[in-house]
Length: 288
Image 1 (cartoon, rainbow, N blue to C red):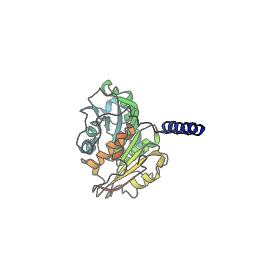
Image 2: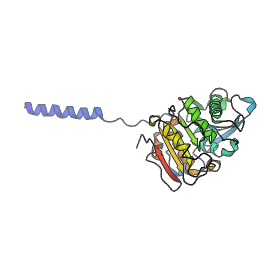
Image 3: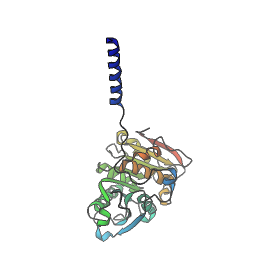
Image 4: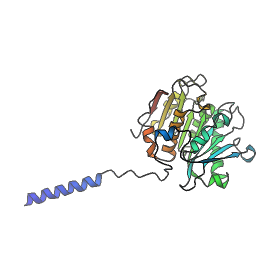
């Protein structure tokens, strides 16, 4: 009888221990916005949210040159994360304007900035990106400001704007995500960056060759920061200036994952995406 009692006690203890150590179900992020993602949703020219836009005069702001804000018209799902995007050297926001409504339509407030001058260098562009985020969260119209969660902010940019994106991420570690696109910067080491960063480079970039820009930038960022490197097959330096589905798909997935903490987007980032448009992909893949 004693042996039977001991056996039952052990069995109950093991069962209780199994229940106690079972992994809890993954709780949904409180920042999830929109339907479950699919390839077709992320590859479409617009996401699930209708958007509107608002121009920002350079005369009404300080620290950057104004721009255009794109935002979801829906107010029923709570606030959204926000992202500031900078054009490159000698370019204006119009060169990247297709990105504004596309990203906003997935549930973000986006400001595409004009720089103070078209010749501003990366460090200046980084400061301007941060000034634009401060404007969004502190001084924009109530229509915009009331839609933004000021704790969920990100930066992106092309060329020197991409270099500025790295500068901004380095200077403000509270940012939730950064996406340098064909980035150019004389500084090659970004070991101080703690912001989850996706670098998107062009395989045939002759202005900011990936071997001397995107790749060393990626390598220098600590793996503990979370990072990814997407290289587009045959792409020149100017690939972001026309609609690029592969870039947009990965960029939106990265922003949703890290700004919204939305793990529904993990499968689009890890394991590494493949396809004829991608010549190389590297990542820290925390959820693989």
